[in-house]
Each structure stands twice: as structure tokens, then as C-alpha cells.
Figure 1 (cartoon, helix red, strand yellow):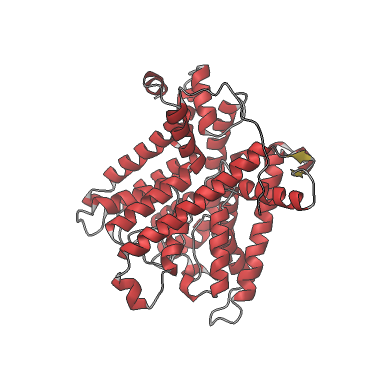
Figure 2 (cartoon, helix red, strand yellow; figure 1 turned 135 degrees about the horizontal axis):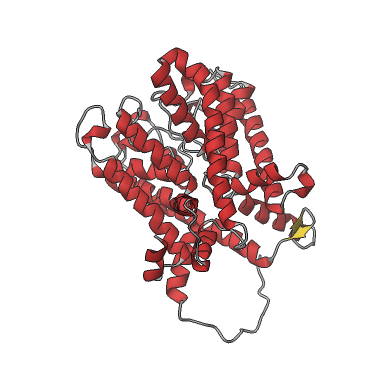
Length: 450
């Protein structure tokens, strides 16, 4: 693979796009056969492509309302493998296998892996890849055990083991797929083993491999990197923020949330997508909180999507510092203007993409009978759009009823959110400006704003 990228002079950013796209297309091919479905009928290729994209991009949105009663054992295994590859990244897995046989990577190959992982230096990049594989395997294996105590007595030894393994993989990779039924984890909303074990796996997957490795290496918080401190701080704040508002705002509902359920939903809202509550039945303001948490997302180099908590942190820290008349800083470190510009640019691109996608799908689905029959407005479409980009998977349940055009837009959003806007921007920037070098500087000036 590395030789192929060299031969065609493919940039590291383009390599990331190609690797994800290749896995998605191959997954769609595997899921396009009747053998993947219990009715043994040929599926629509768009539906197979949608399901493959949702698995590889660890989203959880589904064109089939009920996975457990739709997919065969073959289909479920394909989904689990695609989720695992999507969570880790194909380049990461390939690099691990390549180095496992004592193969040495050339400097150019290490550069490709470094850029694919958004790692800062060459040093330790192979060690990071090995850590990512080991961490995933150990955490997912440990996650299977508590699920066995619940699933095996209910479903039997072999089916229970299969559900436990699938659910552990889906939880750690923040995929949101389950083999329970059409109502996600609602049947187990009062089972604290399922709630807490799933939440822990989701949190660990969302922290990111750099942060997990930092925690394992350093015994004291003061030795953590600035990256890990920001991710852990923001993760804690967002979980508590969501838990508080979910609990308080839904107290007067017919089925109020318990503290554990509010905690679980807060964790799941940040790209996991498991649900214990019907979204349309939630308090309207609570649904706004869900949207905000989905957009914010999780940590970089994790199994989740969204803007990433570090991006939001940099923007908030810079705004607060500007108001106080100070340079942007946190944890005795200052942030460069380049970091702030990247964060704001990313925020603007994301919101423009969401607005445009929402507008197009709203126009396409203006006469959608399923939405009109329910008496809903266009809020469900906004929810699906944000859920697709943030690779969350929480849904109003309208995805199966959408037209082909709308499904293709959601497929793009899932891919866009998982690969990352900055990666796609880098590909475009490299191709457009490869031969353009600025050997001059413009005179700086101030412009009145506000």
C-alpha cells in the first residue's frame, strides 16, 4: 500500500480519504448480497452503501429500522468488522500488520502514518499505532465480560456471546449499532450493568488513544500533556452539563429520566448514538442540548466525530481571554493565532455544511409522507443532518423513509464528519496550491469590525 501511494505521489491526506473510501465501497459490496439479509432479497445498493458508510464512519444511522431482525449472522459479522476498521482507521491497521512481521517503514511511510494520525512528530508514531491496537483489543475484551452476565441468560450462550462482542465493539468505537431491537437500548434502560458498561466503553473510546496512553503512562495528572488535560476537562464538563439538563428538563415528562439514564444519554449524545429515550418525546430544550453535544463531539484521534472538544476549547478559551484583555492560554500554555484560526475556520465550514445540507434535504423531503403523517416539522431533518456529520447516530427514525438523494447527502456528511473537514481541506489545498509559492508579504492593516 505504501509503495502504491508513493508511485502515484498521493499525499498523506489523500491517502486517508482513499483508505476510508475504499473500505466503505468494499463494505458496500459485501453488504449488497442477499446473504446479508434475513429476507434473502437483493437490497438497494444505496442502502448497502449507506449501511457500510455508517459502520465505517462509526455513526449508527440506519436505513433498516431493526438490525437484529434484518441482518443475518454474516451481515452482522461484516458490520462488526467494518466498525472496528472504521474506529481504528485502515492505515493504522495496515501499519500494525506491516510492522508486526518486523518490516521497517521508510521515513516517507512514517510521515504518511504521522499525518494520517494527526501526530505531531515522527518519534513514537509506530509505538502509538501498536498502542492503539492493543488498547482497543484489551478494552473491548474487558467490555465483553459484563455484557455476558446480561445477554447470555436472556438469549442463550452463543447468541448472548455474539451480542456481547458486537455491543462491546460498537460501544468502544462509538458506533451506536446494537443487536437488541428497533428501540436501541430502551429495553435495558433500567439495567445498570448495560447502562454503565456501555457508557464507560463510550467514554474511553471518545477520550482518544493519545489521552488513554497518557493516563496509563503518567500516575499523576500534572504529568499529562496539555492535550490530555483539555480532553479530560472538556469531557467531564460536557457529561455533567448534559446529565444535569437532561435530568431536570425531563422531570415532568410521562417517563422521566433517572440520574443513571440522564448520565448515559449525556455520554451517548457526544457521538455514540445509543438511545434509552425516544428523541421526539424529549423536552424541546433538551433536544437543543442534544444537538450542541453532538456538534461538539469527542477528543481527537478517537473513535468518534464532531468538531472535537479541543476545537471548542480553543475557541472558548480565546474568546474569554480576549474579553479579559489577555493572550489566549490555559494550563500555563498559550495558544498560537494559527490554532485559533484553524478552529474558527473549522467551525464556520461545519456550520455552513450543516445549513446547506439541511436546506437541500428539506427541499427534497418537503412532501415526505412519513414526516407529514407524524405531524413533525423540519426539526427531524436537522437532527439527522447533525447526527450524520457528528457520527452520532441518534435519530428521529426518519432515515429509512428518506429519498435516495437525501440518503446520499447523509452518506457524504458521515464521511465528511469521520475523515474530518481539515483533512479534506488539506487535500484540496495541496492540489490547488502545490506549485504556488508566495515569495512576498502583504502590508498588515487593521480593519474596523463590530
